[in-house]
Image (tube, rainbow, N blue to C red; front, side, top):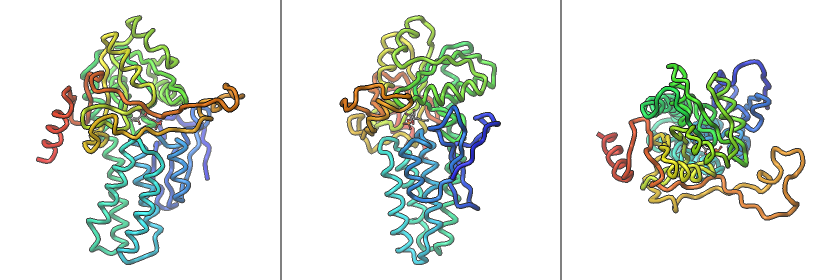
Length: 362
Ligand code: MRU
């Protein structure tokens, strides 16, 4: 079920919302942007799974919050009143949603947090557990907004008014509940008159940079220039870029970072051109259980996204072999700093992460 709306600015929409009365997860169908703004009201496990898999809702933090709302709504529909039966069904839904995409840790992180709500409250009646699940999912959305804003403040300390900033993919408001991660310094700078010049890579094959980043930045009045993915060297050699900000889907314990395919190329070119390369990462994206980038599972997606999608006619010979990994890993030595909600972390990252997590426990 969907509504089509045409009048509001895209920045006025919530990327992910809960309509508890209708028992629906409401998301903007991002595959239709920028030409149409359609709100999807998702009710079933299959609809929610499809929306995540098909990138109708996408971006690591947004997927996490969508899954949290989704699993709450599915739990709400469980009839069983004894804890063990309820929990068994809850886990089936959780595992199913978790299977939609493998790389962004936020999906499993958010679902694990929801599962803990069940386990920690097993003595309560099932109705009370459902209420706590709702409160936790709502809190996760609010936290995401606070975290993104804090990343924006720390990121802003790394640049100055008038700077040229390059970004890859969409780690913007559409990938989070507000502000984005890589775009948060840009939006905060915009509020404060920094007049950044932003360069957005189009981001083949799904064009998140062209369809989403350029769209939301332009809608916010930011000076944005669209680039094809193979132009980052040209603009950096022109001296137009003072910093690169990107998001991430999973940061390994040694700082190796998975983000949208092509990010590692930008990082390598940035190093060669002496441009600082910053990864914006909520601490929920840092996965201390994954030792290095080689241990990160990289999602592979269907061939038609490369050969046919977005084209009127296929743009490749029928039956050609296609390799379509959705993400790549940027080695930690190419990353100047990792910007979290708690501050800017510098190499060596393993030590910096350990210190950060220890300080958060105190
Ligand atoms: O496949 P996508 O569109 O979900 O990929 C998104 C990215 O790679 C983003 O950069 C990442 O999730 C960070 S979003 C704040």
